[in-house]
Length: 104
Length: 104
DNA sequence: ACAATATTTTAGTGAGCACTATACTATTCT
DNA sequence: AGAATAGTATAGTGCTCACTAAAATATTGT
Image (tube, rainbow over all chains, first blue to last red; front, side, top):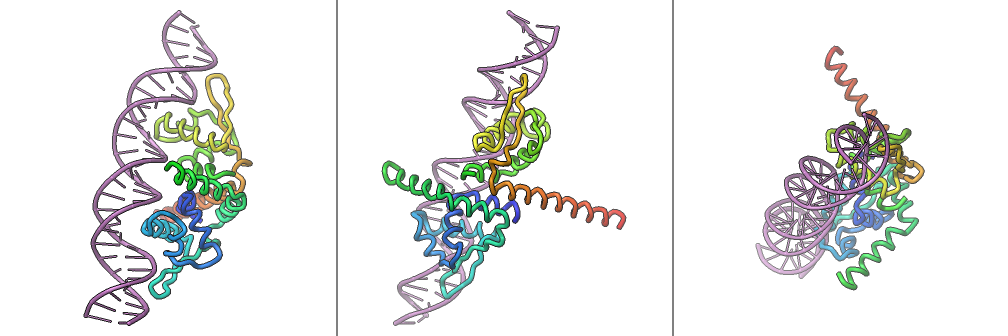
């Protein structure tokens, strides 16, 4: 684990992306479909995660399949798992989405 | 540990500040003297760390003594310790390389 | 009360970053 | 070869954030 990993993981959107590809490969498009931001934005997040060594990529036809590399996280892995277990992040994301829907 | 702790700790300067107060109290001024940024800048960092619950404060006359609260870091504690360990290792490697260059 | 010390607070600045929109590249299908 | 699909790269925008400078607050010493 290097400093760039800690920085990469501190971003909430990237935390969610990482969870999506935690135990299965997913195409960039599938990942992007989970958010209401642009495809390009998600692609950039994937680039940051990949530069930090936290995800691997593999071409499959015209798709690119991403997968987390939990072993590259080192002690950060426990941090993320703890965060997800507590579910606080999920609730926060939902609350923010609701807030945007209501009066954003 | 909450999401704010992860964000607070992802900033390099705050990592260093946290290490300075890791196992001893230090006055804000002493901490600030370790950096060549303004006193005010360090004070702001201390505020972020305090808001995240990662440091405690205590008045002593006109000084404010800060101390880390490692127990509040949860799994993030291992991340920081790992980062500092590897940081020292890097310095050691550099020093050895320099030594070889000079008279190896 | 006044000056000095220790620190926070606030207003403003510049850089970085998450995002959008658009252009570009690469692959598959007909 | 041409159209469609899947994704990256790039230029531009607004917001966040680390920092500076200056003002405000609090405590101690004379």
